[in-house]
Amino acid sequence: MSANLNPWRSNRPNPAGSVTVEQVSKNYPGAQRGAVVEALQPISLELREADFVSILGPSGCGKSSLLRIIAGLEQPTTGRVLLNGTPVSGPGTDRGMMFQSYSLFPWLTVRDNIGYGLRERGLAPAAQAAIVDSYVAEMGLEGFDRLYPVQLSGGMRQRVAFARALANDPKILLLDEPFGQLDNQTRALMQEFLLGLWERHRKTVLFVTHDIDEAIFLSNRCAVFTARPGAIKSETRIELPYPRHYTVKSGGRFSDYRARLTEEIRAESLKSTQVGPAFLGT
Ligand code: ADP
Ligand code: MG
Image 1: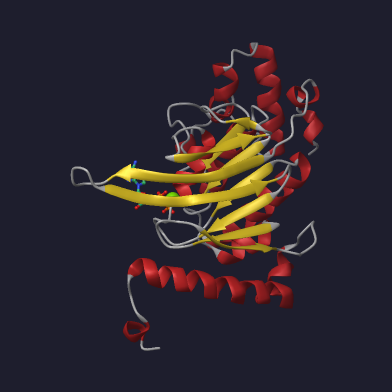
Image 2 (image 1 turned 120 degrees about the vertical axis):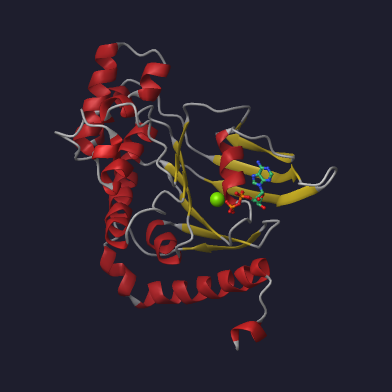
């Protein structure tokens, strides 16, 4: 399905989707009075338009915090985020977000979920309907658009969530472990689906995942975070050509990336769980 089916796209200027994270750190108040939880060390990261960057790292290393800061839902303790050169001061329709839990509104139909942001923006009903129709078609949800989320499979709910994140035509997608609740087969299909979406719409994507294969398969760059407080331990450019077919996962280059990233993440996970090699018998 072609992207220009969406009438909103064709009527609108096309701002670049660059993201610049400049020395962003995050501390939270700790449980005890006066205590501080250091979630993120000052980190810097640059995404150019239509980059697909994955973040890998142990639990609690600040991945979600970084995404929420870029989304404008949280303030950094130090540093700043620039979108296409302009500092972020709050949430905006230039960024679409998606979380592991889909966060669909259970009381709204598929159509109303997809159109939620369009209504919030006060778009005319006919324009809203046209955009919703285009995404219902692109996501393969025809015949399901009057149903409620509870009546859909996990993969379908995920596609509704994608449609809702895309409806306002953001240049940037912030995806926080979006496939975490799917079974392996559905997850593999959704990875291919997301790659297809990205190739058609050319969004800038920042994608958090625990899954090394998923990160390699999707991204042109993988950033590995250290254990908390998170910092960028390494960035690896994934030099596998697009469009990527799932068979790339069984290739030699893919295995090399997997081996390298597995080793890096394992070292950080050991630190974050404070389990030593002796415990593992290695
Ligand atoms: P990740 O997504 O990598 O698992 P998070 O960004 O969710 O990590 O959390 C990083 C650290 O910050 C964790 O130790 C977490 O407990 C803490 N944290 C996250 N959000 C808050 C909050 N709102 N208040 C206090 N601590 C928080
Ligand atoms: Mg998280």
